Length: 293
Image (tube, one colour):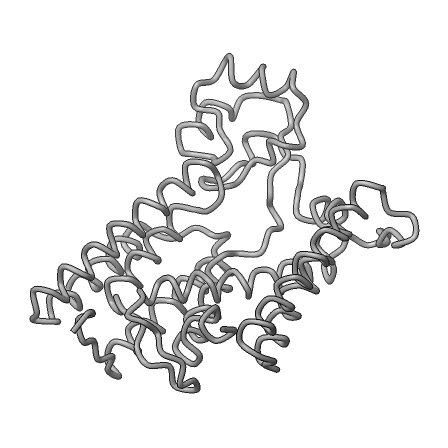
């Protein structure tokens, strides 16, 4: 047998969904701050479920997957692409359900792939759909979307390349595997919001970012470094070794006395909510890439 057999049960699914819902609630209603006890506790629960597999091969598989997920999550945290709490959630998920089980609404073979890979794919799709919708729906009063006719040349070029890329993907999949309404639907679900995000990138960024004094920073806030001038970046980087894209406790403490504002993603959509959608989608449909193929 090329892959260790893995049977998901109601208890694992219940624990998985409860943890994901709790993370989403903290993300949505607690300013994206995940308590340490929740982060450590969820991983501890995951370890218990891994040990409960009672099979050396499956336990080893789960440990390897969790280690890879943890390492990748930490790297993404260090470069400011996700919060540390999200990384703990991903590790807990990979420990509770290490391998993708048979999806409830799809007969596609899952090839023994990690469940977390399916969650990453589905979470990415959910984020691609939700972020533009969330930002456009919450545009500041008095702000209007820039008309498509007046878009900049580089924006039009990027949007055209994106449309060409998705069109080419559809042609390749159709030619290689035959026409599939599911493949076309999923590609459209990803492609349309992606193009919208490119066209209205500046408006979306303006909606998500607030310029705040350092004393208003919260731990794990993301600083929009790309919106800062080179002189400002040099100023902070030279004087404060704690300065970075992700606001740490040390960074907040050191910068608090300053009267110089920073652009911060205060209105960005919390990642735990798309993750919850990704978990449900992975349980129902499996890996969306395999579904397209």
